[in-house]
Image 1 (cartoon, rainbow, N blue to C red):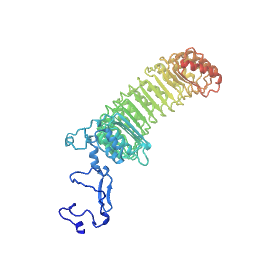
Image 2 (cartoon, rainbow, N blue to C red; image 1 turned 60 degrees about the vertical axis):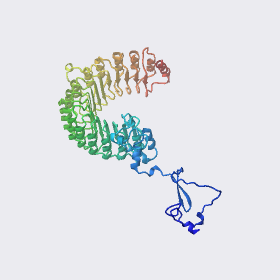
Image 3 (cartoon, one colour; image 1 turned 120 degrees about the vertical axis):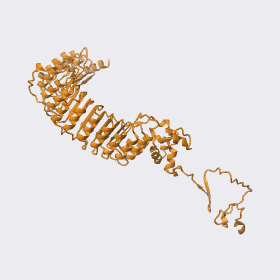
Length: 594
């Protein structure tokens, strides 16, 4: 028997030796049981899907091998041959590893018309593209706070490729534990080459490397907004400038490592730049601003500079090279003096300027303001906020010089003195273009300046004098008498010295055009003013008499008006109005709904 078991001739069932390590082990003998025949065909494969191995313990069944054992290179080749976007999105949901691999496949690397996993060398040569991957950048995505992670960016990159393509991406803040990094931007650059708008706010974990990934693949970028990203320097901005020539809008805020070099690259490489906004970037100086403006002088239309260390040199460059600028905003520029504004106005380059806003610039004086008015013949809107060295005479000189001015707004200009202007009123030529005048919270502005502006601006339709405690009937009545076009909107909130005489005169002279009147806080306005409004203002739809001296009688007068289009009535803080006014209010409400 031992010889039989030890037989190892050419006719062995298993050439090369026994399949058992210990053939004499009695436990390895199989019982014959019922008569059974066995047939083996070595040329045919087993139909059993599992893998069986022999061991001393008998048969062992191994689990099917997972596709995850394949290296990334093999999975990459499989994924890039998936037939469409739905299949790629489904695979991306399997695991984070698959999502990462799919998000790092560039659009150009996908093979088109692939229905199986076979390799087609001809596709590799011709470079066929999947039509579903062709994108136009229709979709927008925004991630804020905890939702801003690399995984979400990867999912966006894979999921939007076959649905129009991602055109706009906004990231604000970041997840403290798993925030957005350069890897997330890399995924976006691979999957979203059609990206046109990118906004990054308060993302400290993104640096130049991530921005370079965007620049290398997203050549269609048009608008770039960067705020509070300290890890991004001139290197990243230079990469954007060199690889994204279609850039039209650039906004930089609180970027401590971006300076003149980045702006110079933008000016040299982005010939289509139309809008620039730079705020609180300490490394940006005159050199960067001058290089940028001189390079794109014929296309740049909007410029906003805030909290920068630039000097009069930058304003001189703006005045000379700003040939296409239509909107200019200067805010908190402490190193700019009167000379800078004077040179800017006399540079004769701001011929197309239509809107100009100056805030918290102590270098603005009467001389500089008049020069700007003369040097900007097409200026239509001018807003001056928190500038302390502007007087009534400077304001009047500016209005005389700016012949096309339509809207003038003054905010908190405490330097306007209340004095008698001996400027020779008969010699003042009126400004026929000014339609809107707003002077708010300027305590020094008084009756003399108001009367002169009324004479100077006969076509006013919208006036806002809220917070001017210094004006009285004597200043406002001449303005009412000189307005030829008819006032439409009047805001006198906080004008505590204005009385019913002004309201009555306004109702009689301009009642046919008045649509909105705000008298909030005018303590000397009483029922007489409401009676005049009720009888002369058929188009009035918005009236605010909060904190006025009106009573129930005044409310009743409004309710009894034959023609009144009143839709909004505010009367909070009126202690003399009681429950007796409820029927009148109900009547006005029924008239409105009718």
